[in-house]
Image (cartoon, one colour):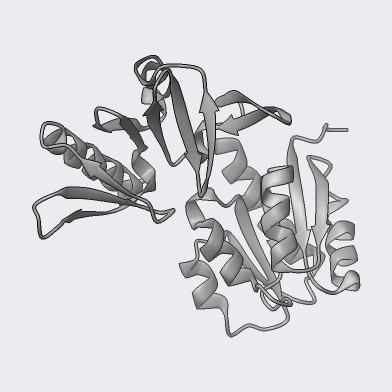
Length: 246
C-alpha cells in the first residue's frame, strides 16, 4: 500500500458532506486527511496549522465563504483547491479563482477519481516547497517558515525580519547572508534594507513624488530604490512571462 504523500483538508458546514469526501478519499491512500472545517474561519486557521496540499472547499459556508477564504489567503498562498458545492452557477468564478476543479454534489466515484488523477499529476510535477524552509525561534519555540510563503524581508540591525501577511518573525542573520539563501527562491533586493519575493508582486506604481513602489499581494507597498529599479522591473517581467507560458 502506498504511504501517504500528501495532506488533505475538508471544508464543509454539513457533516454528511465531509463524511462523503472522507469516504471518496479512502480509495486514494496517497492522501491523509489533515483536518475538517465547518466554516471559512476554521479553514484559514487550518491552512496555517496543517499546511495541507489540497483543500476540498465548499462555497457556501457560514460567515466566510469559500471564495472569501481564497481572497483573504490570496491564490498564491493557497494549496490546490477543489470546490465541492451543491450549485453549478459558481463554476466560472471558481476557475477564475484558480481552482483545480469544481465538483457538484453529489459527486460520483468516477468523477472524483478523474479529479484525483489531475490532482496527483499536479502535485507530483510541483517542486516541494516544504523542504525549502527557514526555522526561526520565538518565545513559544521554533517555527518553520516555508520560503514560498514569505512575502518580504527587511533588515533589523543584526537581525532580519521575515514577513508573512501581517505577521513578522525575527531571525538572527544579516540580510546580506540571508539573501544568498533565498535568492534562488525568487527573492530580489528592492532597496538596501529589503528583499521581496517576486511572484508576490502584484503591481508596480510610480507615485506623484516620483517614488517607485512594488505593491505586494499581501497589501504591503515596498519602495524600490533608483539604483535597483531597472533590475527589479526586469525580474518582475521575467516572472510574469514564465507564468503566462507555463
